[in-house]
Image (cartoon, rainbow, N blue to C red):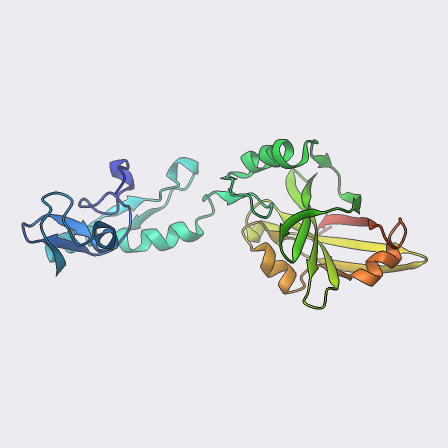
Length: 261
C-alpha cells in the first residue's frame, strides 16, 4: 500500500483510497478488503493472520465521512460520501484525458494533451480552421496485426480542439477498410454542440459522412466498430486516390460547425 495524503484516503485505516470494507487481524489491526489479497493473508503491522472479520465500528465511521473528489486540485468541488466517491471519480469531468493516439498512455488536461500531440506525435502547430483538408499517404503507422493509422491532426475551432483521424482496418479476407473521423478534446456533452462533415472524392463522384464528433473519452474502437465514421472500402480508396492504383494518396476534406449555426 502506497502512502497518500490524508485528504485522499477513503478511510482512516488504509492508504489505498478504495471503499472496500475494513477487516481486522487477530491482534486488532485493520486493513481494507481490497488490499487483503495483496498481503498474502498477513497483517502488514504485526504479521498476524488476516481473516474475513469485518470491523463494524470503522464501517460506521467510514459511512459518516465526507470526502473531496481526488480531482479537487483540477477544479472539482464535489464533496462526497465514502461510498459515492469511487463511482463519482470514474466519471468526474475533471479526471485526466488520455492521448487520442492509439497505444499512447499519456494523460492530462486538454492543454497538456494538445502540447503533447504537437510535440510528440505531429511536430507541427495546431491548425486554426473550420475547413479541413489533408492528403493521407502510405505507409501508415503500424498499430497491431490488423490495424494501421496516421497520427491524428489537430484543429482548433471556436477555441475548442478537434482531431482528424485516419486508420486502416484489415479483415480476415485480406481486404481493407479506411476510416476517417473527428474527435473532440473535451467532454461528450460539449462535443454534442458541434457537427462535422467529411468527404473523399474524385472523377465527379464522392463519399460523404456527416456526424457529431465523439469525445476522446470514448474508445476509438467503439467509433470504428459502430461505423460512426466515414468508412471507405479499399477499392474505393484506390479509385479516389490521387496516386496510382498501387499507392494510396487520399485527400480527406471536411468542415466543422456549431449545431446552432
